[in-house]
Length: 531
Image 1: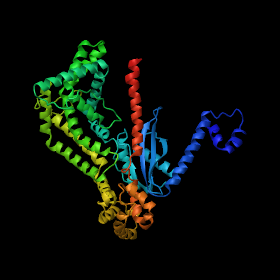
Image 2: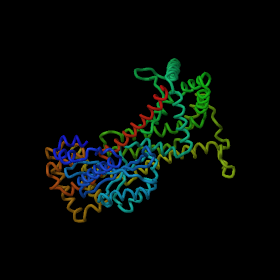
Image 3: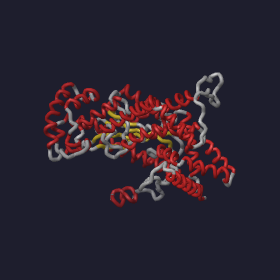
Image 4: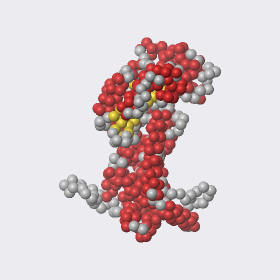
């Protein structure tokens, strides 16, 4: 590195390389760490200078490093002087535990070290799919006490489906179901031979169903695929995994039966027999159908939130409809679900228990044992519990305050020639969500500025055809309209601190996790099989 710098800077060559002792190799760990810390401090100082004194958003993610120490990464999101949104990786710190108080202490220390005021936080985003989901909820509460306007808004490009799966797995039966699902798929996907058998059985099944007229034929329908393994860093992979298995349920059972009879080793035969037993159990089929129906509703929202260009207003409407449909499934969906499961079980020759029998749980203490029916167990302990967990997770991520904040924020969206613009809604946005950022006198002046803004900005040649609030902020600076409408410019910058218009950081975090997962799968699937 010194030689490279010397080739660009004569002073480095003359003052450093020529005068340095010949045994100075700079290869010791201590020297290297000192050099890295110098780089880090310079970069952090540059980032702090770029931030200045405006409001900012705090973005946090966590992961364990190779030494199995919990690390917390902090990213600052802000709008620079030119109106551009910036997301800057500021620091990474080790946390001794993941309690809310410890996380808040470490975050506050980092902000204080860089002379950033907690009172200037106007947005927060956390890793909702991590093992710290519950702690983040506690952390939100602690920060709200210090800064009531530090709004937590769920990242619209975040892995919502994985968060919903994590919430469902709080129910022990659901956690066991997904563990068994992965186990079954791994056995069937363990070799090319088994995959070929699976496809052959599925093709024969499709041909039979076509012959008896149960399914229709046509271009692109009745494709023969394979089982998809759910991944911890792949959006909607759990839903696709369930859909692939339900489509190939019978073929999967036939493959497992063959392995159980003709497997080359006792472990293969035993694992296949156990997997076949799981597939032929009512418990597995029941949870299988619940998760399919729930994820069918939430997957529409998940896919919409992953679009590169977000229509926030329609996204918030979709959040509302998703909650409504899940609540409707809870209130009115039990009888339909039970009929669907029983019909499926009869088709697959799975034994259906008598719903009026007394339910007995394996491993339950006799002193704590309650006299409940089988139907009560499946309806209350599993069906209702799963749906309540989903609703709670959605309400935590998209509470009424966050939804209203985002809806009101869209009134400044310049898309479609500023058709959503509303002076009253914008003033309500300031009164309700940003009262500390505008004085009473400024609130009065803001209304008059908005009236001029409404007649001026949409007709400006450089501002009339833009499609996002981020472009609007840059355009106001470029055309010097930000100096004419300073209060409007201030509000736009506050809105842009919310992590909803871009998702570069979260995608970077997700990309890193995907790479790590795929490398791990490569080693487990290919390397160990080949060598």
